Length: 287
Image 1 (cartoon, rainbow, N blue to C red):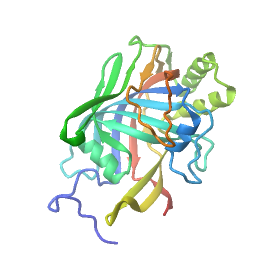
Image 2 (image 1 turned 180 degrees about the vertical axis):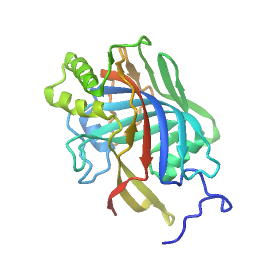
Image 3 (image 1 turned 120 degrees about the horizontal axis):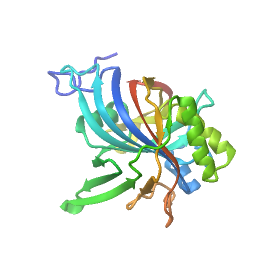
Image 4 (image 1 turned 90 degrees about the horizontal axis):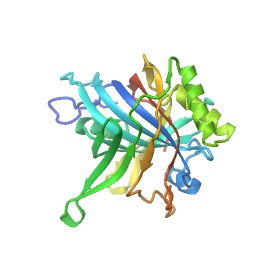
């Protein structure tokens, strides 16, 4: 196997170690009401990628206060913001569901490049603002050479701390009660309970390399499972009044949007802090 040199050739590029250590404070929201056909169309067709019927979307707003990589020759420690929109899919080899990220907006270029070019996550550069009671994502493009700034996501919530849980097991009870109050069925409540125990416990992703002869096709595709090791998770706190808006929601597939003229409905939201150790992942299938 040939050695990977990275770029530039005189120094290995950041992000090509085998372990990243991330410390984050995250707000996790479960969003209901999405069009089921649009959700299914947003996930690549593969026998191991099965969106769960009636499952909500997941929004994860993260303030990464420390990000290091054991392949960084300069031992940099980065801080950045990230907002992820993900679909809940069936877990592979486990009854606990997994997340399949659709897009991750990132405001730090090194973290964006590492996550996208090496790990294969769908990360894009954006202006990501996380404030005490609101957040927004603005994306800059240059159609026909003209600069255009588009607000693609905004959210707000009550900044006052909600009910605290002293253990993850009690966090499950808190979130389950909130979701039940929103009129959600018992199967979905059981599904979300597994995610509360480990919101980033299992992540499925399709990592691809383009065919340089035809950039619209992939030379290699790999369905990869990431299972971050979670260290010293903090107490979880319910977040009240969370609202999400997607003012410029894309057409994901099949000519359909998740929310067609309707506002996204928040089923429950909570925040917590955790340190994660992320490795290069396990390849489940290649084609």
